Length: 279
Image (cartoon, rainbow, N blue to C red; front, side, top):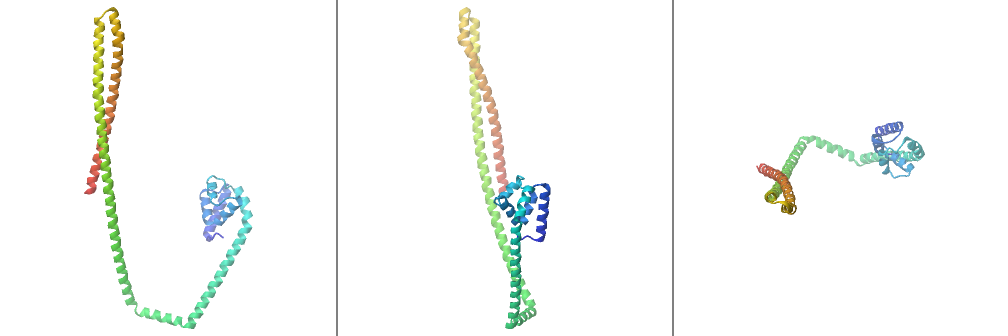
């Protein structure tokens, strides 16, 4: 009923038997039965009250068990037998029709002299076979030449298109990497400026701490305590913060320098690739 050949049917039966032995219909066994016996899969789906499309997912999850198949498939057997008998009846009717048509054509051809005409035409063809062969070889040569010309034209057009696409891609790469290099250089310059600014701030705050320490040493008693409380302690805190900011700026400068180097290398590589492609 599925329209399978004897070999396909045998393969499906073998895979189905193996599925019964293993306890589930899945994997290669499911694929083989599904391809060779789609009517069997429809019977299985109908018996389970599901669409045929749902069987694949059930097979992947191992839910088509031998117990289910042993329950569902025998119930569908009688209907399949009826369908098989109908297919055999239709096939026999077509065989009879084919035989009758061939017999009718043969009788009509003899009656109308078509067979004699065909025989004469074959004789004429045999007598002029050399000329026919020359004409056919000439036609084949012309067609082959036209085909080769078309093939070469198409190949050239494809190559030109690919070359234009490659050139555009390389130009985009050069433009992109150049912009990235410019941006990275700007970040590096900004980071260097931050390093200089934080270095100046750290130097100023350190100098102020040194100045206040000297004042403490020169003063005595309450004056020394006041200088320490109101000036030296806050100055030391600002100096520590400035030193930390300078360290952060140095780290950012190192990162920016690495990014600028990488961007510059990428831009150089893109330019080199573009020059090589142009060559």
